[in-house]
Image (tube, rainbow, N blue to C red; front, side):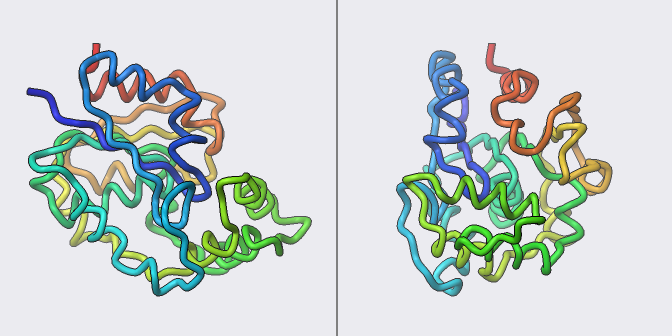
Length: 225
């Protein structure tokens, strides 16, 4: 019996904007895999709060929502970090993992840049801050709430360091675009005990979920044929 597949989108994303346009839900479903796709708190159709404290403990809460047994997981960007945290919290609940759009950035959090992005999604991005401006455009989509997203960005983040990585013995596929600001992938690859890597040539961060190489890596790693 195959595991269900959990899909977790990135910051300012949603199930509707990240997974639906690519057809990946249909591909997995057609192959007989049950798909669990959640909007992260503060995003899309999920409950939205305007205080950072409301998002504390998000990873533990999401673990509690998992069905009985194991799931495989696919995460992009913030969803990838969340997936790794969840796998460290409850290793026995997960099978294979695919994490995309993450690498060096997991180990070098830039608090000043995070605050600029938080201000950007609430409509205060500087004209010369490309990252903040990009996230601000996604935050302006009809199903998003910029104030909730800024609170989400300012929440207390679950730790992801050596102690957590030591608990992640799952088979992990790391997928990263050659032009992704989150790279390089080397620190993440070094931190994982059972890892394979797929590089998406010429692909930047925001194009990753729609890249055919990413979709192929998911289907290959999860053995969906």
